[in-house]
Image 1 (cartoon, rainbow, N blue to C red):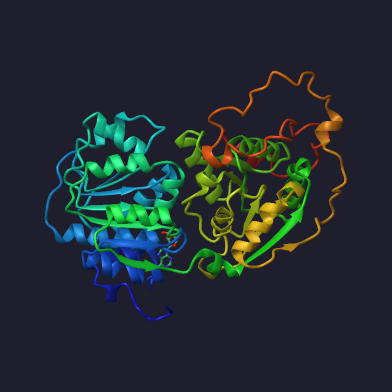
Image 2 (image 1 turned 90 degrees about the vertical axis):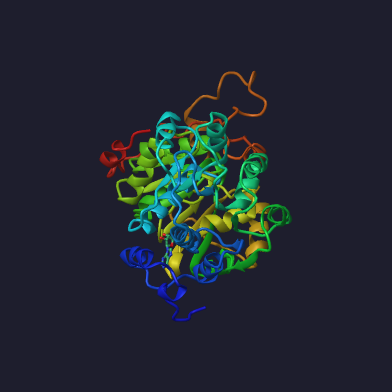
Length: 448
Ligand code: AMP
């Protein structure tokens, strides 16, 4: 796989090659080497590849090429190619790739997802759009409003199909499939080939070619993984301490819930650390702002849920922190795949409470190696929960919602099951305030 194949060898249109050259990429990644020729030849494709492998260009480039080859003009509201993604962030990033690679060709693209005003999307659909990148729910809204007609689709791409199934989009996907011509080319990308994915593939693909690249849990060997055993109630202070002590300038922190992400970002800001939370409850503009602040260095810490982080195109992050371990071991692999990309050095640190030891075991089993338990440097782990000592206990215990507030979870099935104990105390109280406030000005930059 370390051959000297170039993009030009793959037979892509010259205008696309120019765009690739503009990006600075010289050699196709393994998934691109495998996928591009199959798509160019018109085959359906079942591809196993995760974020970070270059999969987006692996389908975007040949899709653009094929649309160029057929000199058909798209009509308003009738796209020729549909790319379905599970999340808004991924949709936005895929469409950005379409624009990047399609910048020298006369094809148009549009991205649409929920959570934002539908009217600008309706206006955009009044003009011809060749490539539509969408999340399933908003797509169906448009079909329902008759602002979109999918009968002219020539190519369908299901990106991160496993994630779409995890997120319960199967019914929406089936509805969308019924609206498409049966005569079409279909590409299905998934991190894994589970039984469910195979079943979906059988239903949507015709005589597909199968390609796959190394899973990230083998590719992420360059990531230095470690664990600090930290009681849940001390994790926020511990993280704040580690960020300052190590002078981390760019760290992506994963929490299990949206609520947890907010609280953690708030606590870090109180400690004078530039932080922002990114999750599904944030407005699109808040998420975009947080992400660009993180990319341009205004924000040192981006706190994200798994779903929100999925598909974030942030290259070569030096440091990832698991504030809590994910319930699903596979998610650990996705998370640490955010660092050590393209052979770069990266580190992934997990803060693990004793209640999470079982989850840690499952992760170690999946990645087939133990993760080093390192002592927490210069931090008193025996300290009692700061809030418990500096604040009186809440006066009443009931009434309390039985299963937590609705809509605080990105993935109802997994996150809804998590334990909600030990979240009652508020961080950022007098005990956790400290006199390290070097980044207060940066923190103030962040709108929430
Ligand atoms: P993806 O797996 O599509 O999310 O891509 C992961 C990252 O790899 C993105 O930042 C891409 O811009 C980058 N990338 C895509 N193709 C190449 C390539 N041939 N060489 C180097 N980087 C690439």
